[in-house]
Length: 120
Length: 110
Image (cartoon, rainbow over all chains, first blue to last red):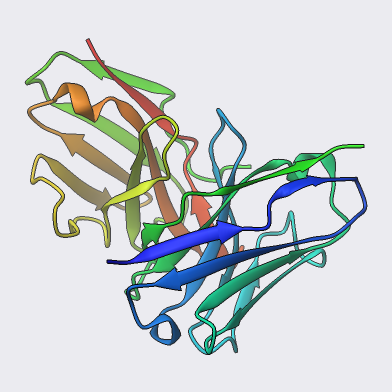
C-alpha cells in the first residue's frame, strides 16, 4: 500500500536551516507529482510547494518563496524540503502528499507529518 | 492565509444531511476543479472528493460534491458520528500559481 513517511523535523533557531525528507513506498514514485503542505496545530492547512514527477516544474507559496526549496530523488523514492532563513511562523507540522495526477491536483495520500519548531 | 472561505462550523443529528460551502474567486474555483478533505483529530487529512464531484475508492456515497461558478459545496447525507471532523475545500489558483485551501469547517454530530 502507499506509504509516505516524513522525517527531519525538530527544533531549530530562527534564521537557521533544516531539511525535511519524505520517503515513499508502495507506488512508482517517479510517476507522481508531490507536494508539501503544512498545518499549525489547531489551525488550517497551508499549501507549501509542488514538484512535478520529473522535478522540472516547481511551485511555491508566496510565504516560503525564496526561502524553501522542494526537490526529489526518484532513484531513492524520496522527496525533500530544504528550509532556510526559518522564522517563528514556520513552526508547524509539515506533511508530504502525493498528487493524484488529475486536474486540480487532488492529494490522495498523505504522510503522518513531521513537526518543525522554530525557537531560540 | 486562506483564499477560500468556509463557515467555521456546521452540525447535525445522526441521519441528517449537512452541507458545507466553499467560496472562492474566478482564479481558483471559477476556473479549476475543487477537492475536499476531511481530517480527524491528530491525523493527516484524507481526500474525500476530487474533481468537484468524484469520490476516491472507499469513500462512501454519502459524501457528494458540487460546484457552481466560484462556489462549491460538500454534502454529507445520513450523518454519522464518525463524520465528526474538520473539512477543507481546496483548488488550484491560477493567479497564485499554487494550491489554496479553505478556512476549514468543523462538523459536529449532535
